[in-house]
Image 1 (cartoon, helix red, strand yellow):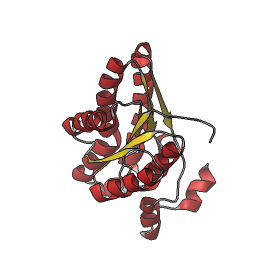
Image 2: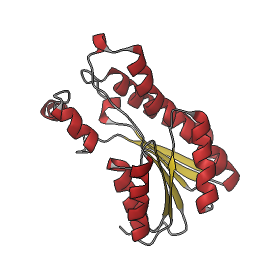
Image 3: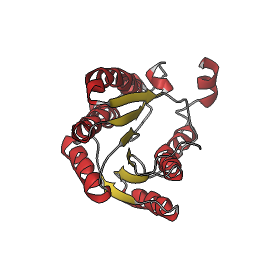
Length: 212
């Protein structure tokens, strides 16, 4: 890529594998230093090693984005380790397809907590630092599921639609602080999580493609 991000620091939630790891490597290729936060610390460390092999600085932190205090800690740790925070990528997410009539309160709350509340807490913590720094960029991963309803995906679809709404609110509120906020809404990507759900028979890729 022609984009250069030398001297910039990027924080990626859920960066231990999948989209998060791919993003980390792309940012490193563009010259950025990268902080990787994940509930799976071993995975985060593997991504850090890959980034470091590309000649960039990197740091790994174990973080549960559903916990507001842990989100603030990951921002503080990123700044302490790498000196600043310029870009936040809200990538962490979970999914467990299940018919709505069978959905338990515990599973609903778990998915909403990570996929929606986690975006709020991480963005809030990052924005507090970016305001002091003079600006920054926040990009959140929504999904095609945030714009279309899919069977068995009630909390996931609700959370991803919420991410789009949150992004619009943040963009309005934080523009005056020179913080640019956007969301992207990809379709299915062949990650480990998607492969597992396809193998379980709870994700119909062909059915999704017919609607997009």
